[in-house]
Length: 225
Image (cartoon, rainbow, N blue to C red; front, side):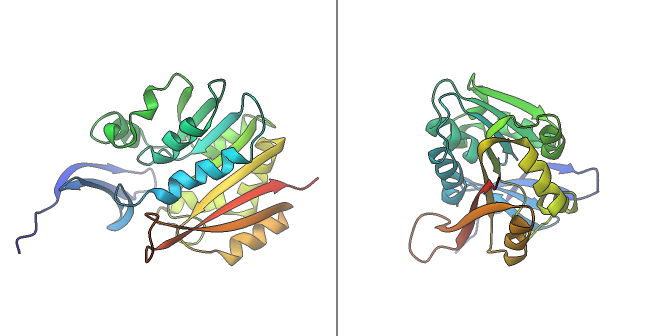
């Protein structure tokens, strides 16, 4: 059997020197970081569930939503589909190249969510965006890297630290919900949630929604009074 070769579409480099590669083969798009699989359009059910579960926990009639990490746009699309017309969604994406890819070859995958009038796109570190907006968000959705336990790009590690969680706590409205995607369960992250006074529940979701799929972990948390 002849295997179709990967077509390299673009490369990007972070400020810390990590290399991102966008490639395509037979309808499959992948973004890789330092040679490791970071994300793909083959499996995005858990990213969509992240937004759906978080929005189901949000009762605000005009919710203010912050999404950390644009990825391939699947979390954003699911948030827009679950949110009311009055919602406002801020997306914080650190890399200009990821934004460009989502306006280029990746745009059709999630139905061009950046074109939605409810979306405000920030080319910025989500940690900085949170620092600027105390008590501003009814929901914060973090779809960053491979989650707390399997960080591929070193710049993302601080986000899942106790200090990062305290920033999230300050940025949430009093009844706001924090949703964090993780490739694997993370007992250490759970300890940090408790340390920073969050109550939380962890939900396993199949990557594609089928039996035998890899299982991803979604953390939904609320700040304790």
